[in-house]
Amino acid sequence: MMRIAIAFCALYLVSCQQSAKTEEGTKDSTTTVTDSAAVIIDTVSIGRQLYNITVSTAAEFQQVPAFVADTSEAVNILRDASHVRRAGDSLVLTLANGRQKVMVNNNNDNEEYTQYTYQAYLPAIEHWVVFNAGYEWHSYELINSRNGEMTRTIGFPELSPDKRYFICSNTDLMAAFTLNGFQLFQYTPGQNPVLVQERELVNWGPATIKWKDATTLVALQHYLDAHSEEHTRFIRLMPEP
Image (tube, rainbow, N blue to C red; front, side, top):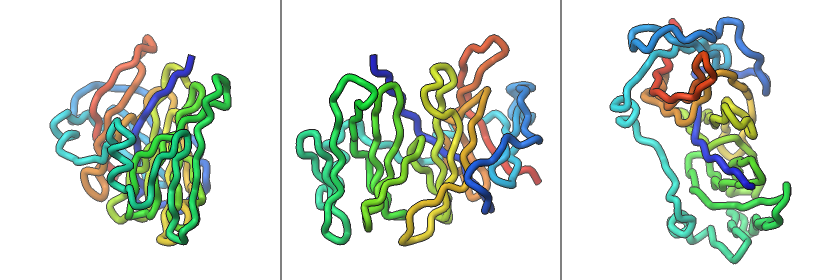
């Protein structure tokens, strides 16, 4: 049975130039203290920066806008119809050089099953975003609109305010079919994104995360309690002074 989970995510690096995979930070907290907004309930290291996590509210979270793709691919394609079209099982993207990038669905009921669904075009990084639903897994494919090269991520890209970085996140605490954590990419105009950090989290995962400003983030967090029961809450991430 195919099980597909969609998660939108991201965390932000304020200033980071580190290698593609970062080990779990020794300063990270693994114990939830309380649900009081005034108390640090957890910490997470993003690059070289340690972020304090406190409880937020739905109101604070909802005040920050975020892109949400339409559930209808036809609606998403209509926005970018000059460069994107659907032809049966093929998703056709017309590149800036006039060539075409064609992504073809695989309908076989096995591990090769793949369904490509168009999500959006992000002009800030000149990439199309395509959701890739596989057999008990999923990913996002970022297609460079200049050269057609593809970058695979675990979630929808969330751009930093300065557009120099973006983070993709995903929550998969129970099934564990996909990476539960985040990926940090650096973006330079005219180039392909570069993965600078990948982090797997254990007791919680960011389902949706948004920048409230250049340094503060708000997120919908999935987390496990002492009995391994999954819960959700809104959190705020602020860099430790």
